[in-house]
Length: 193
Figure (cartoon, rainbow, N blue to C red):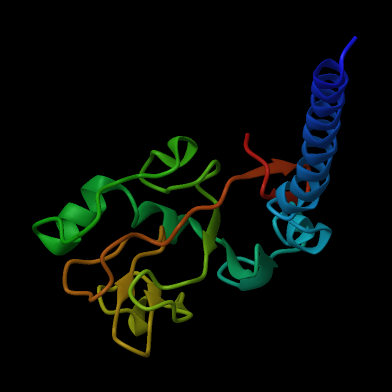
């Protein structure tokens, strides 16, 4: 064995050793970097489901809770409010449908009431124009179209009692319906049916 062969062996050993140490170092540096992409426990808690007791909810009353950092509106609709939301009633009242956004998201809310149960309205209470908080006008006399709805006092957006936006409003989309389920007298927001 000559001097060049032993130097070649040492070089290979050093090369393999340094490559291994470098690889371990890269993995060690990448683990915290990748872990930082995951949401924190606080962020996970903000996105978690929230529960509201609707057993004693009065007709026409607005209950506000928070889900994912946004207000959620819950309203128990009266039979008159429900009757005013049918497609025929809206066409008759407005002579020509005046609704701007005809999308009925999500799928479980693809009906005239935009809810699982016609009696219960659940909406994210953030105006789709500039993020203001629309106010409930449950009394028919106080409403712009005669049967109640939501009115955004900041810029004048108008929504019916199903959260559908009217064409005359600056808002471009309906109020969002969050995923929810009803279990007895508990409304659980953030869980899909």
